[in-house]
Structures are given as C-alpha cells and as structure tokens.
Length: 276
Image 1 (cartoon, rainbow, N blue to C red):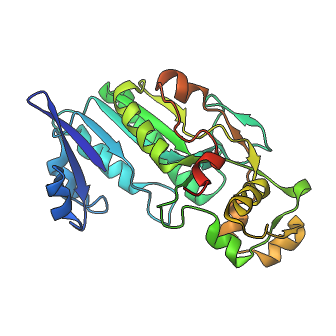
Image 2 (image 1 turned 90 degrees about the vertical axis):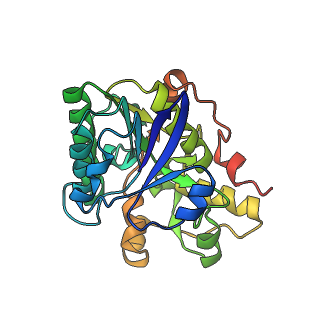
C-alpha cells in the first residue's frame, strides 16, 4: 500500500511495509516507510488519519472467499477520519467469462474463480467505505501486466519452453497493460478518479491469446508455439494456465482515457514488447 500525505504544499510519499525491506533505499528517495502488516490488523492503527490519498495494491491471501487484508485496511482507514481518495487495484477476472464480448465497466461482475471472488469481495469493502465515509473510492480492473524489465513480464520464457496454446477455433481473447501505463493510471485515479467508480485499465490491443504469443515470437525471433485442441489442453497444460484459457473478453478502455485523461505510452502490446 502507498499513501500520500500533503506536507506544506508538497506531497510526502509513504509506503506500508510488513518486512521493512528496501527501507534505506526508499528513505534516500524521500519515501517514508511505515511498518504494518495487512495480515495483522492491530499493526495498521498508525495508518489511520495519516494520508490524504491511499493506493491499495496488495493482493488477497491465497485461500478463502473473502479478502481479509482489504477489510483490515478499510477498518483502519475509517479511524480518525478517512482519506480524501482511495484507489484499489483489482483484476479483470471479476467479470468472469464473457464469451469474447466487449466489456465495459457497466457490465455486472460475475467472478467464477476463488481468486476473482476474493477480489470482488475487496471491491465491495472499498465501495462500502466510499459510500459510508463519503470519500472518493475508485477501483481499477487490471488484466495481464507486462514489461521488459518485469520478472516474468514477457512471454519469452514460455515461448522458449514451447508451451502449446489453443488452436484458433478454441482460443480466447486476452487483455494487457504495460506496467508503466498502469502506474500512471494509478496516479491519475488518486486525483481524478470519481467516487465509487470502476475503470478498466488496459491498452487498445484486441488479440486472442495465441495471436499475442505469435506476435511476441515474431518480435523475438523465436518459433511460434504449437496449437492444440481444448480437449487435449485439459491433460497437457497446468491448471493455472488453463484457468486463463477458460475466460474470454475484450475490455473497453474509453472511460480510462476520457475520465482519467490517460494517454497510453504503450497503446498496443507490439509497442511494449518490441526489443529496444
């Protein structure tokens, strides 16, 4: 979690850290480190009343149907006066499978997996805080994040492994956003996000998963991955990968551009994946 506090017409950036890692480097950069653990609600008491704006990035725990971490943070922020704005970074997975349809923020969420249901629970907690405490609570629904300098942030490793993908007639639409554009969207939402508003944060690419990997393979000069039928994928691919192949949607980012005034630096995955 990152919090922003106004100090004599300047802004002080503070980071909540459970481990205290990188404290010295953060201090050198002018960032104040607060010790606190979202899994230990009592440690969050000092967060209350500290910040004008809060950016919540922490994922839920890996089990259960609710997000206890977000609920602990919401409870802490309610003490001694809530912030002016809270931005929660959620996942596009809360939409569930949309059979390839274009998805706007007005579409009802239909989370199908335990992971997505925990995110939906977090969204509910954030929205409730926004309505009851009269603060601007914005939710960013984010698909696959990529970047050249991000660990596992490109398809290169999977391409080198030769992992098969679904054949064209069985394939699903997938959505992406470059890590830099996501960071800029988070900052924009802290100042421009509307109250209890959802924003799709994705680029302009409309590609199926196999076409995305084919594009990356061509850019990197690697062989395109083999294609298999969905029936064969059930026995050949890991469950984690199969879960992403079970949902298809094309996310619309009009609201991101219109309301948050974001101009994408990487409007397509080709722009972001192309070797420097």
